[in-house]
Image 1 (cartoon, rainbow, N blue to C red):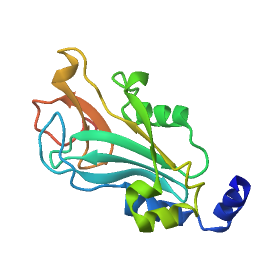
Image 2 (image 1 turned 180 degrees about the vertical axis):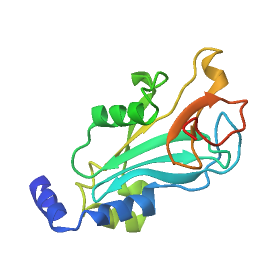
Image 3 (image 1 turned 90 degrees about the horizontal axis):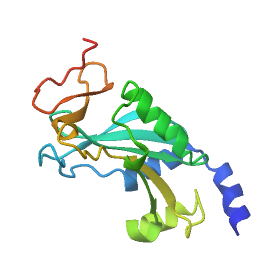
Length: 169
């Protein structure tokens, strides 16, 4: 059964996978945590036909979480590298802050349950890798990660600063 599911996934355009992820797995309007309670929006950081990396960002540009979905390669090391490079070396990007979850069609509703079989074995689900900055020390609790309004790059600065623009500008 797995081999027939895998071969059917190759015949479906991989952009359909991204459509599925955006339709069922990207959730708009969740409240921002740690920074404020305002609703977040999803901002794509990198996207191609079978990979989507994005951030949940509040109206003040605070990054709550970065998520990664991929159809074929499921590479946590690649994701860690990507987040570190986006955060300029990622001194606050630690392995312990990365997590993985499995999203199943049955938990997403009947339509998703029917559609998920086009991409994977339904019992295996789709992997969602995510990173959240879990501050431990008092010094870390004073910092946050933000998405620059001008260039769309991630940057870290004190939570007390109101600027939504990175130091590049």
